[in-house]
Image (cartoon, rainbow, N blue to C red; front, side, top):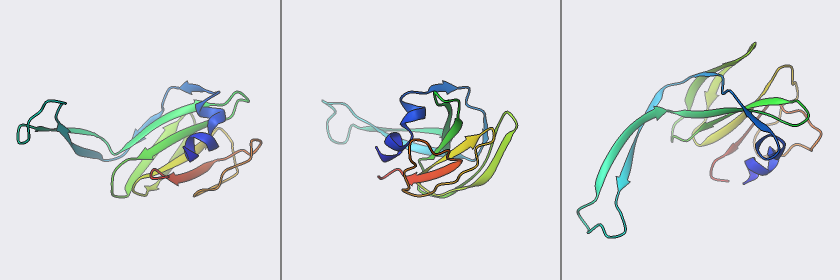
Length: 130
């Protein structure tokens, strides 16, 4: 909720852009499959492999652009993200999200800092447990 609220100019009032190109390792997740009437011991498991970081790109109504990267795994994950002329590389901690400002945004905020409505954030992060 904190992430959504702090970035509502993008996520609520903005528009989604093509996601850009993200390079990161894959992660295999095991899903429990059971339904309302599944008897104990009859449940099954399903494994799927997805990128360890989910990402999307957004444009706020005032023209600012940012990319959202979310690491849903329990380990830190290296990444390299490109969109347009912007390139970012780093390590995204476990269960963290980061905002990357695109096209010339320069201010930085990290952790649980919530920017004012008029700030221009280039990078921010927050835990997914928030």
